[in-house]
Image 1 (cartoon, rainbow, N blue to C red):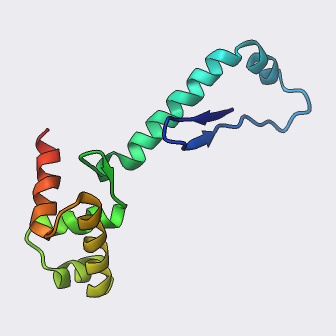
Image 2: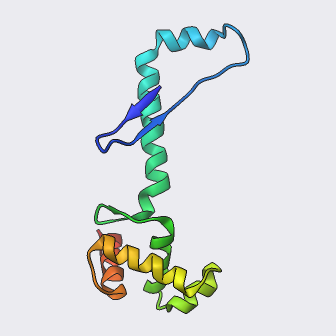
Length: 121
């Protein structure tokens, strides 16, 4: 069963069996509309679960961009964050710059404020 959302993203849910003619297949045919609703709800739940923490004002940040901003909100420098995440300072700066560009701000502090405002709403 394939699912598409208004942003062009899609997902698929497949039911499989090791039997040639599984009884479940008759149920799928009989309850096709209900199974589509189940598939859509699974898709919605999975997308929310995987991405809800990384959305700021409707803008999707990567997990790493969000994580770098979160540590910056705790007062950590790019060097501190690099040590915490086990990456280079340049990598942290790269993710922070991407986050700033996506959020349309010039400084890390502005990005952190936008992220904090999201947490309060």
